Length: 252
Image 1 (cartoon, one colour):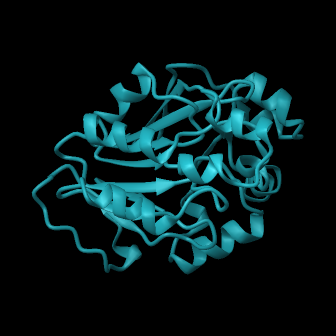
Image 2 (cartoon, rainbow, N blue to C red):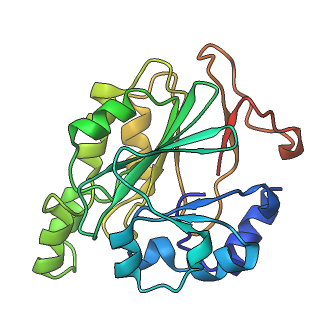
């Protein structure tokens, strides 16, 4: 699991509705210390006795009390093996103590988690180009943010290179660096005040080709998708989660 920005109870409810067992979780990886990414971490990790991978600066800035015997450091370019999954961490531009993005790999299938990014860098491009599926931030529409109610200092923070990716920045990354075999793109971390989900979905679908595009809701869980290495395979989006195949990764 990457980040726990919801309460423990809410995470459990959403997983249950998806037919996912909490017992399947083996570890938690934390991208950075902002509250919308760690709100439920301490309670969830303690209740389910899950190891937490978190960088030392992030842990210090979070001021969370975690089990020191079940908390492990995280570093730039570190690869961590959890069962059959290889989790790779790399630094990103964001106004946090020590922020990271992640890719998760299993049997040569890679899923990227790329949110809370102030600017596209070479590291992000390299990892994005190797993903079969990705969660990609499309946080704000520039015109909506500039004309919106946010104070000037907050607008500068969001657009200042260590804030968030705009729709335009995310779209350029997708158009210029999407691998042919990318089967799924889940657009994530949309601002509720400065973006429009229908606009975002329309923008990306117009250039997506065969890649399935979905805007992830902040209010409810997104359905499950199986991601395989065969780009020519027709993907069915209705299935029984109990039939999970170990050689594939599931997104939720």
